Length: 353
Ligand code: AMP
Ligand code: MG
Image (cartoon, rainbow, N blue to C red):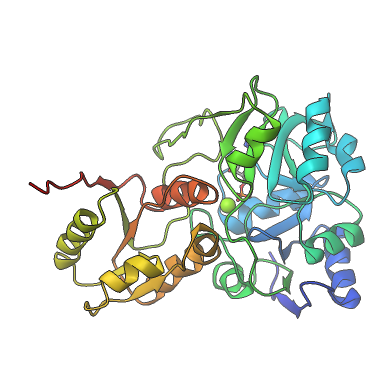
């Protein structure tokens, strides 16, 4: 592994060519580069170099059965990384790329087996971020990149988060500021019939349904010890802070607040993730509250940073309210449930009589 991480601050809209050139050469030479995408920071290596890909797994402590996503800069690179490409894949990529949609297709021979965890399919996307695209062009090769965090920790939405998890384990870090979406891509399998969402993310399912009316989505949450994992990457405990997370669901605000207050009373070091509206309800309590903003898009941008922040403040328990499962809310709900490792309290509506 590397001894020292070289950090370059870059303009997220127009990255400095010198920094991009160093990062591109690092990828070509088999090194690791962390870089911003529109979703979260990625930990990248040359997708055709199995030794470089192995370094990603080692740096993250990622289990070998959890495959990586390959990033490309142009749709015409698809045949380098996939084969038997259905017309649907081209239609979807024209409609949603560059953007937070990952397509699972049959893999090309050149993709090394460790990248796909031995599967004959590969996950692909074109990121919508000037730094990521400049790096891909400079490296002139597809780049394998999972999120740039230690395995099972919340994904990184700032260069600080990458340093906190991977300092000295990555050769180059391109610091392009905060990532604009904040949750990972939506993963769509086109090797399933009908097409199946494997992970909700930055492209809302509602938008995909317009293109794919028969789209299938069934949340899959596996316990840690299930092996081999039928659908990779669906480990229940994921995106987790050190603190225990408890998620509260329910439509009756008053009843949900009451249940959360009862839980808060039982803990010494407890923090809260709350929308601006919910935060007001708990303003009288002297506990840390991370405000997630007014809507699901704002909450997506802040979620992972908020989890990390409450960890740093030494909380041993974090309470959050389950969002509505629409738009980016579905991805938030998925990440929160995994952060909570399935710990969900369903609060029934109260009686008014
Ligand atoms: P990350 O970029 O850290 O969010 O991780 C990549 C995600 O893509 C993980 O959830 C993987 O399980 C998923 N993934 C990668 N390749 C495949 C594949 N061939 N089939 C299904 N899921 C995949
Ligand atoms: Mg990840």
